[in-house]
Length: 154
Image (spheres, rainbow, N blue to C red):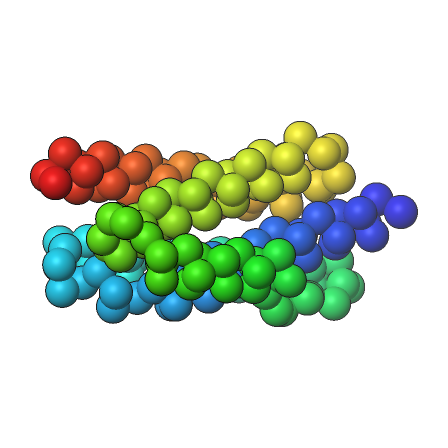
Protein backbone atom coordinates (compact mmCIF):
# COMPACT_ATOMS: atom_id res chain seq x y z
CA UNK A 1 0.00 0.00 0.00
CA UNK A 2 2.83 2.40 0.84
CA UNK A 3 4.32 1.89 -2.63
CA UNK A 4 1.01 2.80 -4.30
CA UNK A 5 0.79 5.96 -2.21
CA UNK A 6 4.37 6.88 -3.08
CA UNK A 7 3.68 6.36 -6.79
CA UNK A 8 0.53 8.48 -6.55
CA UNK A 9 2.34 11.36 -4.83
CA UNK A 10 5.24 11.17 -7.30
CA UNK A 11 2.81 11.20 -10.22
CA UNK A 12 1.15 14.32 -8.77
CA UNK A 13 4.57 16.00 -8.63
CA UNK A 14 5.32 14.80 -12.15
CA UNK A 15 2.16 16.50 -13.42
CA UNK A 16 3.08 19.68 -11.57
CA UNK A 17 6.53 19.56 -13.14
CA UNK A 18 4.97 19.05 -16.57
CA UNK A 19 2.68 22.03 -15.86
CA UNK A 20 5.77 24.04 -14.97
CA UNK A 21 7.53 23.08 -18.22
CA UNK A 22 4.48 23.87 -20.34
CA UNK A 23 3.96 27.15 -18.53
CA UNK A 24 7.57 28.21 -19.07
CA UNK A 25 7.48 27.22 -22.72
CA UNK A 26 4.19 29.07 -23.22
CA UNK A 27 5.56 32.40 -22.01
CA UNK A 28 9.02 31.91 -23.46
CA UNK A 29 9.89 34.78 -25.73
CA UNK A 30 7.16 37.10 -24.41
CA UNK A 31 9.54 38.97 -22.15
CA UNK A 32 12.97 38.56 -23.76
CA UNK A 33 12.73 41.62 -25.93
CA UNK A 34 12.04 43.89 -22.98
CA UNK A 35 14.11 42.04 -20.35
CA UNK A 36 16.89 40.03 -22.04
CA UNK A 37 18.71 39.72 -18.69
CA UNK A 38 16.05 37.23 -17.54
CA UNK A 39 16.46 34.81 -20.46
CA UNK A 40 19.41 32.85 -19.04
CA UNK A 41 17.63 32.28 -15.73
CA UNK A 42 14.46 31.25 -17.51
CA UNK A 43 16.37 28.81 -19.75
CA UNK A 44 18.05 27.37 -16.67
CA UNK A 45 14.65 26.81 -15.04
CA UNK A 46 13.31 25.00 -18.11
CA UNK A 47 16.37 22.72 -18.18
CA UNK A 48 16.11 22.17 -14.44
CA UNK A 49 12.43 21.25 -14.78
CA UNK A 50 13.23 18.65 -17.43
CA UNK A 51 15.84 17.09 -15.15
CA UNK A 52 13.35 17.07 -12.28
CA UNK A 53 10.79 15.41 -14.55
CA UNK A 54 13.26 12.63 -15.45
CA UNK A 55 14.15 12.10 -11.79
CA UNK A 56 10.47 11.74 -10.86
CA UNK A 57 9.80 9.38 -13.74
CA UNK A 58 12.77 7.22 -12.71
CA UNK A 59 11.50 7.05 -9.12
CA UNK A 60 8.04 5.98 -10.32
CA UNK A 61 9.48 3.33 -12.66
CA UNK A 62 11.73 2.01 -9.86
CA UNK A 63 8.55 1.44 -7.85
CA UNK A 64 7.06 -0.44 -10.83
CA UNK A 65 4.64 2.41 -11.35
CA UNK A 66 3.32 3.97 -14.52
CA UNK A 67 4.46 7.60 -14.90
CA UNK A 68 1.57 9.92 -15.75
CA UNK A 69 3.64 11.96 -18.17
CA UNK A 70 1.16 14.70 -18.95
CA UNK A 71 0.19 18.08 -17.64
CA UNK A 72 -2.76 18.37 -15.30
CA UNK A 73 -6.20 19.67 -16.16
CA UNK A 74 -5.76 22.33 -13.46
CA UNK A 75 -2.54 23.47 -15.12
CA UNK A 76 -4.24 23.72 -18.52
CA UNK A 77 -7.06 25.75 -17.00
CA UNK A 78 -4.52 28.02 -15.29
CA UNK A 79 -2.62 28.63 -18.54
CA UNK A 80 -5.88 29.48 -20.31
CA UNK A 81 -6.77 31.85 -17.49
CA UNK A 82 -3.37 33.51 -17.84
CA UNK A 83 -3.99 34.04 -21.57
CA UNK A 84 -7.35 35.65 -20.84
CA UNK A 85 -5.90 37.76 -18.03
CA UNK A 86 -3.01 38.90 -20.23
CA UNK A 87 -5.42 40.03 -22.93
CA UNK A 88 -7.07 42.41 -20.44
CA UNK A 89 -4.07 43.38 -18.32
CA UNK A 90 -3.57 47.02 -17.41
CA UNK A 91 0.16 46.63 -16.86
CA UNK A 92 2.62 45.30 -19.35
CA UNK A 93 2.57 41.71 -20.53
CA UNK A 94 6.11 41.40 -19.15
CA UNK A 95 5.00 42.34 -15.63
CA UNK A 96 2.05 40.00 -15.85
CA UNK A 97 4.26 37.16 -17.10
CA UNK A 98 6.68 37.63 -14.21
CA UNK A 99 3.79 37.66 -11.74
CA UNK A 100 2.51 34.40 -13.23
CA UNK A 101 5.93 32.77 -12.99
CA UNK A 102 6.16 33.76 -9.31
CA UNK A 103 2.61 32.49 -8.70
CA UNK A 104 3.37 29.18 -10.41
CA UNK A 105 6.62 28.68 -8.51
CA UNK A 106 4.86 29.39 -5.21
CA UNK A 107 2.13 26.85 -6.07
CA UNK A 108 4.77 24.23 -6.96
CA UNK A 109 6.59 24.86 -3.67
CA UNK A 110 3.36 24.33 -1.73
CA UNK A 111 2.64 21.07 -3.59
CA UNK A 112 6.15 19.76 -3.03
CA UNK A 113 6.02 20.66 0.66
CA UNK A 114 2.63 18.92 0.99
CA UNK A 115 4.12 15.82 -0.67
CA UNK A 116 6.98 15.79 1.83
CA UNK A 117 4.60 16.36 4.75
CA UNK A 118 2.25 13.58 3.60
CA UNK A 119 4.48 10.81 4.92
CA UNK A 120 3.79 8.86 1.73
CA UNK A 121 7.31 9.04 0.30
CA UNK A 122 10.02 6.46 0.80
CA UNK A 123 13.42 7.72 1.94
CA UNK A 124 14.96 7.85 -1.56
CA UNK A 125 11.93 9.71 -2.95
CA UNK A 126 11.91 12.06 0.03
CA UNK A 127 15.57 12.92 -0.56
CA UNK A 128 15.06 13.70 -4.27
CA UNK A 129 11.81 15.61 -3.68
CA UNK A 130 13.54 17.65 -0.96
CA UNK A 131 16.37 18.52 -3.35
CA UNK A 132 13.85 19.51 -6.02
CA UNK A 133 11.93 21.62 -3.49
CA UNK A 134 15.13 23.49 -2.69
CA UNK A 135 15.63 24.23 -6.40
CA UNK A 136 12.05 25.47 -6.66
CA UNK A 137 12.58 27.77 -3.70
CA UNK A 138 15.75 29.17 -5.25
CA UNK A 139 14.04 29.90 -8.56
CA UNK A 140 11.03 31.39 -6.75
CA UNK A 141 13.27 33.79 -4.83
CA UNK A 142 15.19 34.66 -8.00
CA UNK A 143 12.05 35.54 -9.93
CA UNK A 144 10.49 37.28 -6.95
CA UNK A 145 13.54 39.58 -6.83
CA UNK A 146 13.33 40.21 -10.58
CA UNK A 147 9.59 40.92 -10.33
CA UNK A 148 10.13 43.41 -7.49
CA UNK A 149 13.01 45.07 -9.36
CA UNK A 150 10.96 45.44 -12.54
CA UNK A 151 8.04 46.95 -10.60
CA UNK A 152 10.36 49.56 -9.07
CA UNK A 153 11.69 50.39 -12.56
CA UNK A 154 8.21 51.38 -13.76
